[in-house]
Structure formats: structure tokens, C-alpha cells
Image (tube, rainbow, N blue to C red; front, side):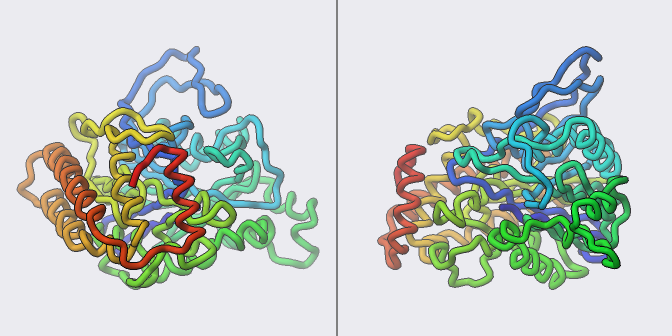
Length: 440
């Protein structure tokens, strides 16, 4: 499960476009934060994506990706032209393809590598969908997980929503703000669509005679959409973005991604994945619901800054700034996999995250104010007009965040547990820790 939003002027504070996403996947599905420079290739090259090979293009853009470690594609990312994309799993009435095709994450990465604008990225994904189709198992350990995809695509000038149902699709240009949360949202109004979209709905009996076409109503799978709690989360994200109309910025976008709906939130207190900042809790309804990576993009024509955690759980993680300057990404250790390795940024942070889960409210409070103060210092430096090197700010932020995480791990693990979580919740996380080798 995931949540993605975008806000355009005049909803933002300074005329920028603000984009945000939490990527929700399985708890031990480490997400690799990676930078790939621009490349030139021979026309004969073939590119291996997650499941299939496709022809490579002559040149690719440099990309910053947050990628589930075992797949080629990415959950979210940006390129050196200021294009940013986030994807969402959606369930539709169109048949699923378990073998072959491009995953939604493949489509996202390919669009970033091959597109100079948001409109180009939209066209690229639509063409790839037509040429190769979408499909393939998208779960890490849950090998039943197959789905279709929706996307928010933005650049410093505009943003688009692209939603798919098998080979079919509809696209809507964003006018002000938009959010998506694992359910189709486009209705009867859209700017572009598959040429056979409406005819297919009629042929399959999804659009009755005399009815007005509505993309989501015709193609949504009600059962999966309901149990994903997508409508509830989308309603929440829309309300939070709307509440900041005219003043939305990086700080408020980060707060939205950390939202639990209540200050007294307990992650063992609910059955469905109803929170934007998501914590896994059981194998039935909240397994692929751990926020394993988060990003906020600040987009203006003369400045683009990407705020990333590079870790799970935005509530315990720290957002750090990245720009396409110099080396782009500091050393954050080897690429993580599904096994605990404290030398990697993602797994090192899991010692903090999973220690907090043992007594969430009390343990988060032990460092919440310091977390917020540290992030605000990064924001102040990144947007200071006299800052000469964004690369220096990036290196400093990653180093200070790493040091803070170490302090907080020690502080939290020394706190006595005041409110023990429910047994079934503790049992679920013990199994996840045993599988990955995390000790908390």
C-alpha cells in the first residue's frame, strides 16, 4: 500500500510544486536509495528489467531511485531534468498477468531514464504499456501479490495522474492538488485515455446502456480496493493537503507523510492500513503495509531538492536533502537485501524503528523534538540563499542524521516498556525480526 500527493501553485507557499510519497511494502523488503548517472548506449543493447528484456534507448538521464532491493524498477524517484514519479498498486476488473510484462516499478524507472518532462514521462509509460504490457509478481515474500498501477508524475511546470487497468489507461492533468492511495480515482473527466477504453467497458458489461462512463466506477475491484482502506487514506491525505492551501512547503509535506491521525497513535490498535505513515501488523490485512521509503520533492524551475529518508517509517526516519550536484548521494553502505546488515543505512535504522515499535508512543516521544529540530536545521541550510554548495549540505545532513540515529537507538533501547503492545502484534514483529536477523 502507498500514498502519494502533489500540490501546485497557488496551494504551495512559494510557487513551487510539492510532491510526496510513502512507499509501503513488506517489513523486511529493504529499499535501496541509489543514484545512476546519465548513460549512452549502442542501439543494439537490450535492457533487463525485473522480468523481461526490452530494447535500450541511445541515451538515459541521471536518476535518483528508491528501489525495492530485489527488483529492477523503483517505487519512486527523480531525474536530472526535474521529473519525479511515484506509483501505487491498484486492483481492477481487468485480468492480471502473473508472468511477463513490465511491473509498475519498471514503468516508473524507464520513464525517468527516458523523459525530460512530466508530459514526456506520461507518453513514455503509455507507449511502454502498449508495447510490453504490465505484469509480474510484485511481492517480495508474498508471491501472490500482483496488481495494476497508478502514478503521479510531476516536473517544475505541471503534474499528471496516470491510472491503468491492464492495458487500458486514463490520464488527468492536475489543476491544484491531487492524491492517490491504492484505488482508481479518475472519474468521468480526464484529458487523455486509451483509444478503446470506453468501448472495452461496454463490451465487458462494465458500462450499461444509458450510463455515463466513469473510469473508477467501471474498472475498480471493489473487494481489494475496500480492504486496502484506500478511500479512507485518500480522504485523509486530501484533507491534510487542503488544510495547508497556500502555505504547503517541505516541512508540512513531511508532516503529512508522518500522519497517524492522532497524537496518541498505537500501531497495534487497528486492523486495516488506515494511516499515511504505515506500520505492518499482521499477515492478513497489514503485511505489505510498512512504509519502507519516503520522499518529498521540491520543484521549481531554478531549484529542485529531493528530501529522502532512505529508511523505513518516516516517523522514526530523518528526511535529508539531495540535489543532482556533484556525487549526488553520499556513501550509505552496501545495497541492502532482506537480511539485517548494520553497515547499510536502511537496516541500521531498523534497530531504531523496531525498538520504538515495542512501546511506540513513549519511545517516539524520547527523540521526536530532536528529530524535528534536526530536520529544520537541514531545511534552513538547504534554502539559505548564501549556501554555495548543496552537495556539502547533503553530506552534512546524512552524517548528522546517522549520528543522531545512533544516539536514539541507545536512548530508546534503555527505556523501560510502559505500554506493552498486543500479543498478536508482538508475535508478528518477532517473526519478522527472526526472519531478517534484527535484534531489538
